[in-house]
Image 1 (cartoon, rainbow, N blue to C red):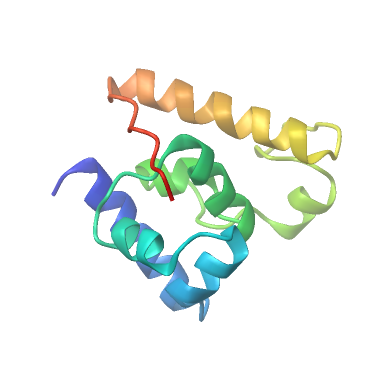
Image 2: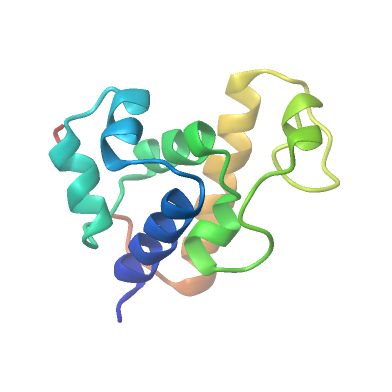
Length: 121
């Protein structure tokens, strides 16, 4: 199984366990339901959409990418504006997105993965 299919499997498992449907995620992200269906079937999730998926579903990006750590970002971390365990930040969306973007970049470099192409949804 390739990397994107592993992400898709974790995403689908998480959504099933939390009672979320693909159409729910599509509505949260304001994308076409076919886009979410493609991700669920192993299409690469562009970085800028990956951040939205993590934010909308409150998924730990490291878990979604690698299967490491806890699947959910604890509520207290979100409430306090922490995007990474033990790392306190200002509670703005921009800062959380920057941290997630840096984490994705670092993980891709760690794994020597190519950056997925941006999709036109």
